[in-house]
Image 1 (tube, helix red, strand yellow):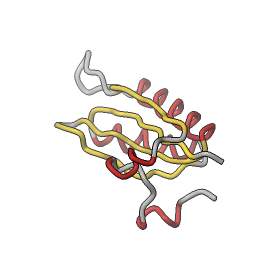
Image 2 (spheres, helix red, strand yellow):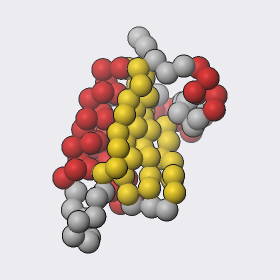
Image 3 (cartoon, one colour):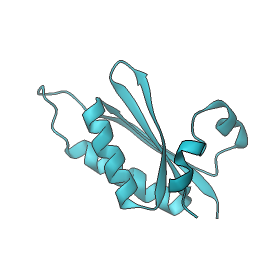
Image 4 (cartoon, helix red, strand yellow):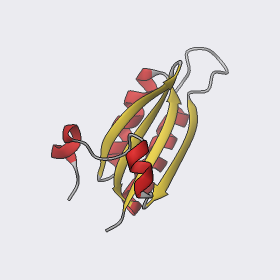
Length: 108
């Protein structure tokens, strides 16, 4: 099956951890990266089959939208996207490929 990459970006480490947990519990995906983008922005990256990644990203998106910010009006959810069958060049340049650290969690 073709592999996909899915990303959800949130503001803050606690929301990022909660979203990552929801994403890996919602579908058969592997968490491959939690990238600190800038400031408190964190992008959670998962890999897996296309259908599983889509389910995972949608679950992460819903979880992030339900979270309450400390300050009224602050937005914790920033963006989300999934790419079915990413080009090999993306995997060379960006931290979205499986690694030795994730090997035991990679889905068959």
